Image 1 (cartoon, rainbow, N blue to C red):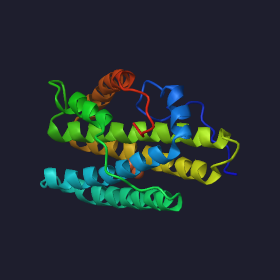
Image 2: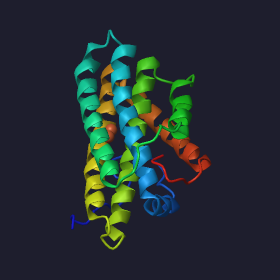
Image 3: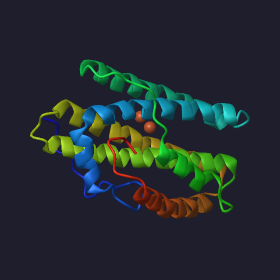
Image 4: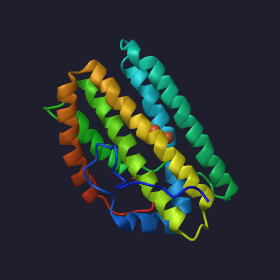
Length: 209
Ligand SMILES: [Fe+2]
Ligand SMILES: [Fe+2]
């Protein structure tokens, strides 16, 4: 059994202001195969987003190494989740449009009080990582509770939650490097409020976001 997940709150260390609806944990645990499929694509998209940062901002050489490292780690996660799908006899299937990321992109990148294109993209990615981290924590906690039917998966999600927490910090730190840190912190607080509202509007479904 993995060591019990110890957290005063699933939001610890994250910029988020709202916890995931507890119903999501129930729905996700009752349809794990569907969640894993969606999750696999989230990892794929996270790797693409990292590579996209390099091609979108070719003059920002400070992004190159961290984004390569991120993309490599996300591709490793993609491989791990697709291995799990294979073990469970579940097809990957096609990616499904991510309404959460679409909504978040509107919040981060189409606002007049943003940080400029590069800062906005860094904050967008920071929030996707942060919410993924929170959801992985919720899932890990739930799976530990589920009479240890999925102890390996609980451990897996606990490990991934730690990686996503690191990723949120990396994106925030990169934003601090390229924009005024005080502005970045203020923007993070604003986006956190809008992100919470966005989440409220989205249905509770067996998918990662
Ligand atoms: Fe990941
Ligand atoms: Fe990540």
